[in-house]
Image 1: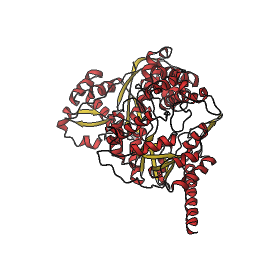
Image 2: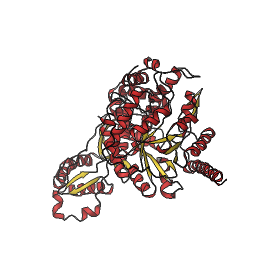
Image 3: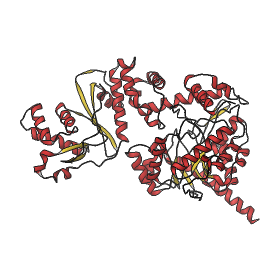
Image 4: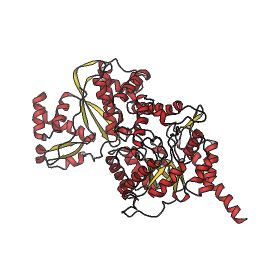
Length: 272
Length: 295
């Protein structure tokens, strides 16, 4: 008699690699061969994981089309067998896989499109935190403003794209024909976060992107105003900084604004 | 008796979970209708893993629904029969969710989902051997200790049988429930599917498992693939499964019943209509028994 441990190892290998040793452990039924019956498990394994990836990367699937996405999914499943109990996390390496694995890596917009989809999905069920409101900011005495520090909402992540992946996402999401892939003259900063229950993203201009990066690294508001002045001129620098801050509050992107906030633990993600 | 199989040291309630009536699997497609309409559903079963996440809408919705309806947690990746070590991270998350949801019970499947750190995300069959029985009894006892409550285990649909099996599935299930002191979820469709695939009698299974351990029924649809049936949960419950459900209710009496639909998810009203069929069958069976008793 074979041990349960060995039997399970053979069964799993039979599903994942096509090894037929497991067939010796099982019976033909009255009407079906053991190959056919074991084939139910073999088929279900690939089909289920492809479905998980397709659900998690719906627009990447649309962009690539069924055949190319199926090729991608098969390659990914072989490279990254699921190592988590929850299928929610199975596809977490797909953007990096696309970025680093030929032939997919030749199409850089695909990795960035997948990066954006993953960031939106992660924001959707990421940690809860109450966003700071304008009213709360208004209640802070003006003399304390220079010392204010900021904590990003825990779902917020800043991405930097070298392609027009964000435009491709928007077109696909509107069920329109996406633009042709293109390299951008300058990298584009995309902020992804969850506002109430909805995942969102928006494009930051270079000055706001700089201020967000510094703010979520722990720079105080007085320092941020100086940085903004250095970045694009002293005229109305405080007004520009205050306008960015108002946008962050209006969009629910901050979970703490006070002289004593903890620094954000997760502020940067890059698609390279 | 091995130390692992001694009676639990923690105080488990001896009370069998309550009869909840007729429930549905909670699916995101139906969130808005449920929250706005308070449909005539007695309780909801949630897939545990779908809510083992940090936060956001799924947990917010679940919090609202649990204020209105009893909730049962149903997992798909406990992998109770795996020969790999128990996944303590998974169990910790499961317990955390249970603390939040306060479910009437927690169920998963009598199966394994992977070994060697891999999860195949499928409900894989086990050989019905004494070795496997000892192994699963030990694991159930340890999981129950960890969760501080009895586990409910469901019979799965299977497509293969093992050459070395030493007993029937229902003998295995019965021994397990008794020795591990756990509850059973009797999946009516899965018994039908496995009976068809392996050529056993649904009645043998029905009469072979202990009535006092059954706390829940599952109903679902399936798909015919050549000469075998695959448990796809993408169709309405078929007539043959309704017939077996009638026989099952007649044998076991009232047991909390729910309908699972995981693919091709129809409008909520359609699944509720199916649930009404289950109610009607259970009422008919109860009335017929009353008539017989009166006579």
